[in-house]
Amino acid sequence: MSGYERGRLLSKFADLVDQHTEELAALDGADAGKLLLVGKVIDVPSATQMLRYYAGAADKIHGEVLRVSGKYQGYSLREPVGVAGVIIPWNFPTMMFFLKVSPALAAGCTVVVKPAEQTPLSALYYAHLAKLAGVPDGVINVVPGFGHTAGAAITSHMDVDTVAFTGSTEVGRLIMESAARSNLKPVSLELGGKSPLIIFDDADVDMAVNLSRLAIFFNKGEICAAGSRVYVQEGIYDEFVKKAVEAAQNWKVGDPFDVTTNMGPQVDKEQFEKVLKYIEHGKSEGATLLTGGKPAAAKGYYIEPTIFVDVTEDMKIAQEEIFGPVMALMKFKTVDEVIEKANCTRYGLVAGIVTKSLDVANRVSRAVRAGTVWVNCYFVFDPDAPFGGFKMSGFGQDQGLGAMDKFLQVKSVITALPDSPWY
Figure 1 (spheres, helix red, strand yellow):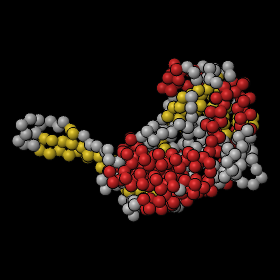
Figure 2 (cartoon, one colour):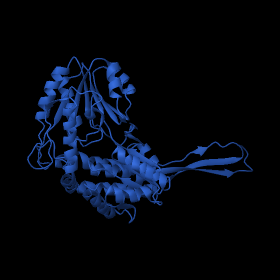
Figure 3 (cartoon, helix red, strand yellow):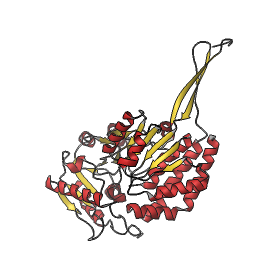
Figure 4 (cartoon, one colour):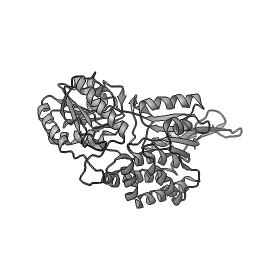
């Protein structure tokens, strides 16, 4: 298809997704324990925004005219790489589906999508809507299954030309190994995080408290970009701690289909037990538990919003990704000190800075090794803003026009011009 035709199909696909927002939000709520209201006002609308962004980009894929020495004419083409394997996680089933599929389709690739085994329903529904939109059979293929079977089949397949993955660092390693052992297919990996949120003395304390609560407790802490390490400068530390505890205790845990609920259950028993185990690690290693730390209900996988203080950089809760509603709260004195602490992690996905000083914001945002830095805000995503990690948070970009590069390959074409009057 031409880029124009692909763009029209993607736009029609987006319209159909919009028309089924209620059902799709309910599917992700039932599968993952996600809030129905958040699905309706954030997840699904963000997905269709992503589709429309890349629909507009589909007919704007250009090569270059090359200045080749001698009697030759040269130009480059950017061609679709072919079949793209897409493996997505369970924490944002809808947004992750379109984060990968939208640029792949805009580039002209076909896709084989493996949704997480915990959350396959919305992906299957999107395949159905794609067919209604007129996407040809075989262009979007959804293959539910487990990572060690369906996922491994994608990463090792000799006819899959590239793999785009979001998930854990451990699985990212396996995908790279499998790609290398098969056809050396390129991979893009968006992996884990242990992101710092740095709050300076000049910050509005109430705003900073609300931002820190959102950064770690939104989506039950099941988000790679969670601000799980909160550093507060000593001048406002005591006031911040008091208000942060109150804010956490007011964060309502309950039925994700209740519009008054702030946080639903963890995705499954395995994740529920993993989070509780990390809480026990925090207590046994000497951190002080200020609030939460236990199941929030006698039935179901609900966990109370949890805050630890007296945390040191060598503790598990400060170094390892918990993927749950657990905040490690730490004090600092100077800018240099907090930069060193913020970078004391194997990850480098995002960071947050809260300050009224432009000089501090600029200095810290350049010194922190993270793919995205949010200043006086958090969880601000946009299709035009590239998103990806440094260090062991992976490589390759989602969002932005550059996200299409992983689904394109460059070809140079050079033609002899023996009778050219100039060269």
